[in-house]
Image (cartoon, rainbow, N blue to C red; front, side, top):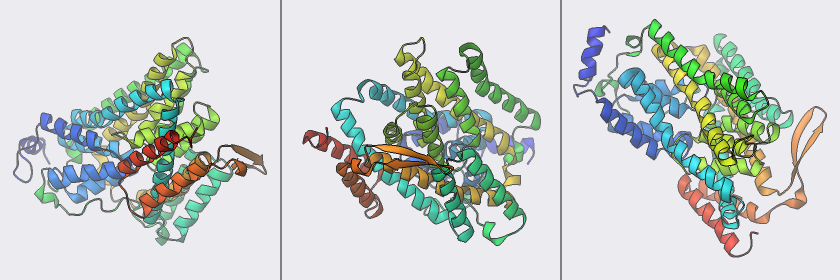
Length: 469
């Protein structure tokens, strides 16, 4: 497509409709952001309904191709998908605005909740509310295991990869990035070799109930990927984003030293942004392990509280990392007041977590057409997704131990590092709430937000009756 043709298409879509104005697009992205509850699956479903079925900006196939491309990238795929579609509609500025608007409501909501939690988290009613939320969150994570496993574990090879992944992280404390890199290498080699077990798509599959043909949409069927920013422009944007991402990290290390909590936050979450493939729940397993066991920023139950916040607010589920950064800095403020330190720690976490998402899209989007049919990369995605099932199962079990038991220790020996509960410390009310939440979600398919509300009310009810102290 020539430059002249592209300029013409920016005035009129392939289906004859007027191309959406930048202002109209901003309104759509703000609407999607405010409706994006319930984790990645819910967010992607909302985007599909509005962008494909309602607005018909792009067709079913292009949406799924874009989604599968985002699944190949580290970081939250739902937010990256908004950046990619925003880039398709209005290039770099469109991608920036779409991605920022998608996270903005979550940033504000999690920051307010983090402040309330830090100030009032030990007060009885607030503690009871989060006690109930923990049970619902456990059920939601278990549902994620089943949903992803149903899609990803298509054969014995994938089941074995998930089992090895679970054993590696749960029994031997193998770092999450190493598990993902190993899975990707196995999948890439298997796909390159043409082995049948590695030929699954690894994608999401259909996300809507209807199919919208490309020719009936604004973007049409032609590829716009190569008509965008040239190589020099891509390089310029890439360098700018790298500087914006890593400059604060370098400055903090120079000014505050390597032992500062802000340096730890900047370095850890920057590393997380590079290695966390496989979706939000896989990322949370990595963050929970590091934040609780390595850095001591949170207690295990507090990680569940943060996840409950993220599940009940709009925006990416990975926004829980802002709560982690807030609490870490709040408890180790250095020379600052705890509240100021917490706010800065939370915002720093969000900055280094999400800035790379724009980098991956703006560098990769112009070449997506070349990647979408690469069988070796698709196989790598399939094995990563299979490994992620094992990682999320570890997260679910780890959460379950810390919800159901009041005391959890660690067994170190024989090369293993395993969480071991004190079975006499079992909490019967936590068990009751967890079982009820699991039944509500799996048997009756209760809406996630509604489940969280009922669970929180149940926790408050236990406190009001004196059963929860």
